[in-house]
Length: 214
Image (tube, rainbow, N blue to C red; front, side, top):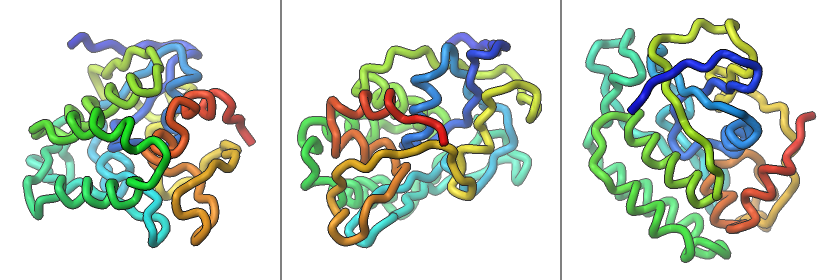
C-alpha cells in the first residue's frame, strides 16, 4: 500500500473511524483527495473505535475493545483490537436487532458482515476494510491515502481529525429521513453510516450529495 500526504485545498484530513457517522462520508464525497492520519497519538472515546446506531432504546454507542501496546503514547496505527467478551457477536447482534426491520437491511447486511467478521488485529486495518466496503456500497469511488507522519493540527485546511467527534457539534443540516424507531424517539441526526444505508439504500448517496452546511 502506497503512502502519501497531499497538500492542497481539496485534500481532507480524517482520523480512522469505526462505521463512521454520516458527516464523515459527506467530507469524503466532497473532497478531491482524502488522507487518514495513522500517526497521531491514539485518542480514546472517539469514533476511532466507536460508532453510534439507532436502537429501540434510542442512541446506542458500540465500542471496540482495544489495547495500547506502548501505553498512552501509542500511535493509532499500533492500536490492537482486544479479542474479549465476544464483542463482534455482541455488536452484530445489536446492529441486526436495530435494523432488521429497516427497508434495506436484507439487501446490504451480508456484504458488510463479510468484512466485519474478518480477523484483523490492527484497529486501522479493520476500520479501513469496513470503510472500503461501505464506499463500494455507496458507489463512491475515492482513493483513501494514509499519512507517513503525524500531521500537525491547524497546518492545513479541511482537517477534521478532531472535529468529527462524539463530543463536538457538526456544522451540517441533516434533512429528516425515515428511521426504524422514529415513532418512539423522533429523528436522530448524524448516526453511523449504517443507519443511512439500511434506511435509504440506493438513495443514501443522493442524501450525502444534498447535505449542506449551516
